[in-house]
Length: 266
Image (cartoon, rainbow, N blue to C red; front, top):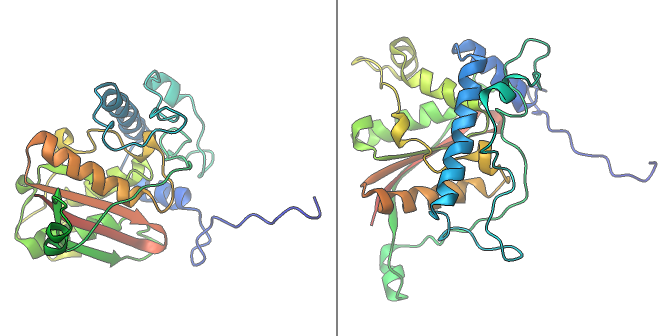
C-alpha cells in the first residue's frame, strides 16, 4: 500500500463538496422530492431500454467485442427498488442515491464539426447545424449545477425562440435532482424574474414528451469528456427521426459552469 497511487479527490476545489452533495442541496432548494427523482431515474432507464430495443442507437454505437449493448441500463428496476436505497451524499436524510445519480463508466464519442462550405467541398452531407451556443457561470456554493437554466435562458432570448419552438430537448442527467431543479427554476415566475429579469412570466415546463426520449446519463452512464458529443449526436439523430427543426442541448459541469447549444436539422 505504500506504493499505491493517491487517488485524486473528487471534491470541488472551491466548495470542498462533491457534486452529489451540492446537487442534493440544490434539489432541496427547489423542492424536488426523493420520489420525483426516483421516478425520473426510472424513466431514463426505461427510455434507454426502449430505444435500444427499437434499434435507434444502432447508427450511433460502435460495437465492442461484437456488441452494442449498454451495461448500465436497468429496465427491470422499479420504484420500490429505487426507494429502498439509502442516501449517498447527504446522510441520513438526503434524497440523492446511487440509483438517481449518474454512474461513471468508460466510453468515448466523436463528432465531426466543420464549416458548411468545407463539408460540401469534402463531399460530406451535413446532418445538423450549431446555430448558437453559450457557457454561463453561476455561484458554485449556492447554485452549483444550475448553469443549464441560465444557458437555456441565454440561448432562447438571443435566438428569439420559445419553448414551443424546440422540438427536441437533450439535458445531461448528472443527477435526477439536478435536472429537475433546473426544470423547476425555468418554471418559476419568481426565479425567472429575479435571475433573468424576465418581466413576461416564467418559461414554463420543458415537455416530458420531448425530453431525453432515448435515455440519458442516469441510464447510459457519464464518461467524462464524452457525454457532450453523445448529447449532440443523439439530438441530431432525434431531429431527423422525429422530423423536428430545432434541438436544445444543455449540460451542467463542476465549478458552477453550464453549457447549452441550439441545433438545427440540416
